[in-house]
Image (cartoon, rainbow, N blue to C red; front, side, top):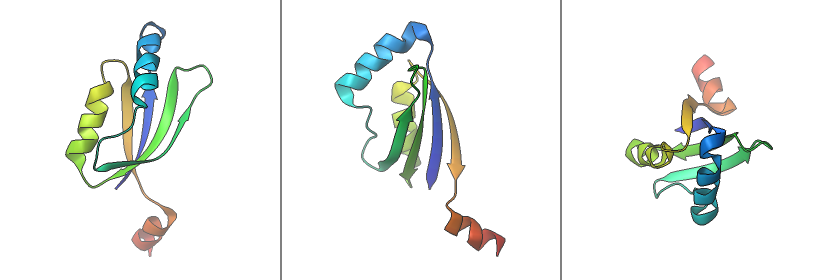
Length: 87
């Protein structure tokens, strides 16, 4: 399943979050594929498209960053998947 993830951070946590990102790359664990990631110019939010059938790995990835970031995750469908649903 595909997920659209919006993350946000506050200015008091920004430097620590950016430091971890520089050190780790913020990559997901095995079982989760990051399709794309974009960051706002101000550094306070971003957007990720990720794919997984392993909800445990997905949850761990989000949980590992929840000390610095807040997340909104939305399951999403491709055009082809929606076309099948709507006939």
